[in-house]
Amino acid sequence: MVCFSGCGADFLSRFEGTEEIASGLSTVSEAMTGVVSDASSYLESEFGIGIEIDGLNDTKTETKKKLKKGVEKAKEVKEQLDEEGILSAPSDINLHDVDGKGKNYAFTYDGEEYSAVYTKDNWKIINSYKIANNEDMKIICSALIEEHPVHGSDMESYRTPDDMAYEWEQHNLAYAFLPDDNRWKARTKDVDLNPEDQGLSFTEIYERQTGKQMTIDELMKHMKEG
Image (tube, rainbow, N blue to C red; front, side):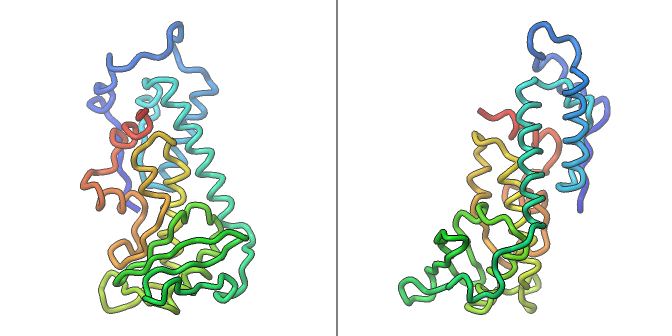
């Protein structure tokens, strides 16, 4: 996984004088420093984003609260991924063609109906963020593949349930982490399983879709929105 580091004097200087910590606070509390340190470790391991803790300590308290909340939500999703699933076979979801045109499909998971749209070499699952179990993701992807296989990034091989589930996981983690008022969050609630994004981390998918490098500066912009 690619790691981007936002450390150094140049990085820190970009924060100087731009944002002030709440009135009366001259230093960051020990608890908040722990939150930032925890966030740094988590984002490094899950997203490959290196974070300069001192730089984060210079940002607004509200931004750090969003960071804390995002990390907590992402960790919850991560834990759910490893729990025991409720599916045992692809047939359990009753995937079916809604209009007989081989494009609009529906399936049932945990009592809720979901939409899946197939276009050439692409499955789009609507509201995929609601499904958080890795084993169940693989079974759902198996059902989709049985209906319409999707090529791998080399356009010769085909995607597998495992690598589709990995991409799905990346979307779910990003959706959980980003603040509700963030414009990018809406783009992560559905997952597109296509050749281009095979094996890519969220960081790499973000950079491909936005054309921007996922640096600490870029990340903090998203945490400050709203």
